[in-house]
Length: 361
Image: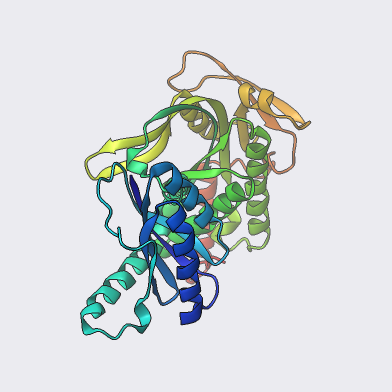
């Protein structure tokens, strides 16, 4: 058998009658499929444990995930090869813990409230891919590494070390937060996954048939940064916020990497390294976006591709054919060479203009 414990948030007000109705319907349906469990409701949140044969339980959990009466459904624990039921007498017992006055239950309420708060905090630190695995009722730690074909995008702030040298800590952090927010929103909008933040850099992944989406993500990031710069005066650091973006495609390993109490769900492979190398290469190219011929060939839209020549990538013997897109967003403006020295001089002028520290938007 299998047992799933999950938490979810109610999308509407749940009174005693509504909870009783949920219990009655669940009991009737679960009895047909030998499903047992308990449903606890507390201050807008459901905590539920369901147990039964694996195939039947998986079908039920998929149905639960589509129920409009709750949202943010997240599996807290999945147990396989269960030999004995915990709730054999309950096809579904519903408990409104918020209305329970028993003093013995007070610690239970506090415990569940703490679980809810911790769960909401951890959601912000959890990678979307891992969240989806959890929400599907699977244990991310039990996921086996697999070979996949993906498209990887790296983006990074140009001249970031200069910002850290010249600006106060608070302004550096806000600058990075603004940048990563733009990157994250663009990736999500186009159907990709943010795999990780590496300091001021972002690594994102797309399915192998999403080459067009990856290029569109890059253009969206460049466009939003351009709008940010235009809305900043020359006396503000964000006026000098530029990025380089590298994209590569190929076969790679997806899965858990690490040991003991530090596990990272990530991508490993040659294409990942190439994407990072291309991002670094944009420092020396006339375009802020660079991608491989493999990415170009995977595109289905009629993009105005621009060949940037053949270039060496650190750690690779094979010379890469590098491309970009003919677009004003990708083309570096003549007035900006975008090297660290240029940004350093600009920031020094800002800081020496008066005694007031520049303010980020």
